Image (tube, rainbow, N blue to C red):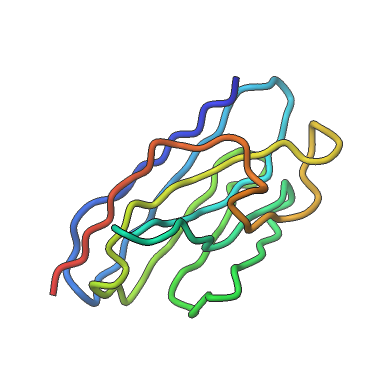
Length: 129
């Protein structure tokens, strides 16, 4: 089984920054596709972006430039750097992982909810004005 664990959420004032971390583990020798998503109350879960095993990143169409994904080289660790946060960024932030087509390596970043099999519990980000 694959375990996905997020950390780094919390409360921040409008205009502030946060960095979220995510680590996936499970199948030995596997480098996962990994991505970040968020879900605000009463809204659907939406993609922020995803990374392949080489750290190449693809962002969702709604990306506004304030969020940056990065991957720890050679590891199943994905970061989400968020800046200039505003109250509309208040949401539960989820990390997800998926095995690539070959099983042990991910060659294409994934950005859609339905592409991921394994999800973390989420980390809450609350932005106050």
